[in-house]
Image 1 (cartoon, helix red, strand yellow):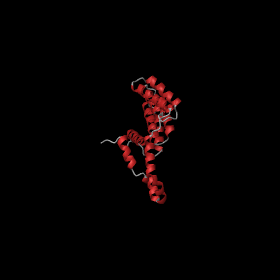
Image 2 (tube, rainbow, N blue to C red):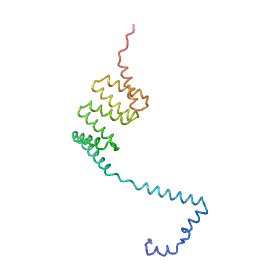
Image 3 (cartoon, one colour):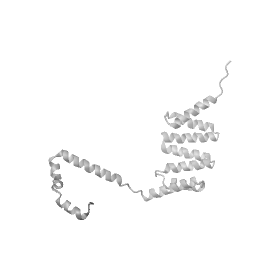
Image 4 (tube, one colour):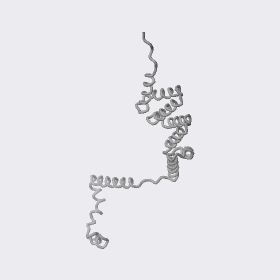
Length: 193
């Protein structure tokens, strides 16, 4: 038998409501009971608040649409249009969460279009924004690799030295150490007589 409003009325009428009305009095007399009720209330409130997700602002929504469109155009090899949108994003939304993705998109397109010096500049911008943490050092390492591709050995070595000077235990730092070991292995050994 399903519970409907019609057959629920007698149940509600015969229910002992005195317990609910006596709760405040019980709390006054029993502090432990009060703590239990307050804890239950707080748990319920936090559970409800967790379900209510804040809606993104109109600005955040526009920023997200712009980066999604730029990413989509980049995947479709529409690099000029994608680059324009990534640049627009960096100018219009410099404080939004996808700013790093926009700069990474610019660097990626620069590399595809063989504009390697511009890509290096972007990686330095990203490094300056993130600092010498794991992410920042990975940007520096990307810049070092591009210097290598351009045959700019002195600049590459300068960036590698900067990575190693942090003494960080990151993937980029380990790659930089391996690169130094590889360079050292290629150095001609002094002749022994």
